[in-house]
Structure formats: C-alpha cells, structure tokens
Length: 88
Image 1: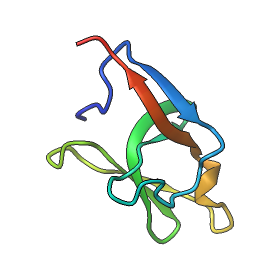
Image 2 (image 1 turned 180 degrees about the vertical axis):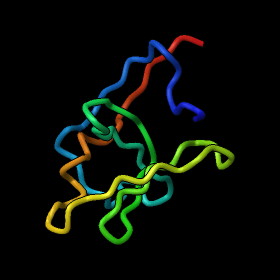
Image 3 (image 1 turned 30 degrees about the horizontal axis):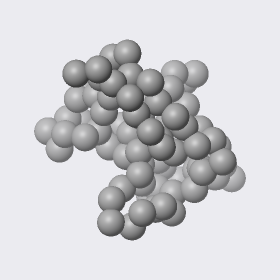
C-alpha cells in the first residue's frame, strides 16, 4: 500500500472533526482511522454500512471496513488530519 505519510512524520489530528463532510470541498480530507487498534491515514468514503479506505495511489488496493447496522461511521474515525511535518 502506498503510504500517505513518510515514516517519522509528525501529524496533528483534529479529534473533534470526525464527520465525512469535507472541510474544504475543493480537496478531500485525510482521516486517522482506527483499524483493529492500529491508526491508519486514508481518504475515506461511506457506502452501505462500510467505510471505504482509499490510499493516495490509484494503483494500490482499497480497504473496506464493515460496520454494524447501528454503528455510525464516526465510530472508527479518530479525526481529520490537519498538519503534517516530515523531513524529506
């Protein structure tokens, strides 16, 4: 999977923003997602009780998280990625 962040990156997560509504409609949000007690950073969409986790590269595979019928999408979304700092 093509990572969205380079190893050793410092990120700031807005934990109050766990809605799938875009904060800036011109560009998609990157979210911190809890996947089996691991934190992953992906573009996210919601389709029929499933969170679809999309990587940066279109050549990489998409991951799908099934949610319980009464479970909201925000239950897995830790927050929206606000800032990243990384050495190149």
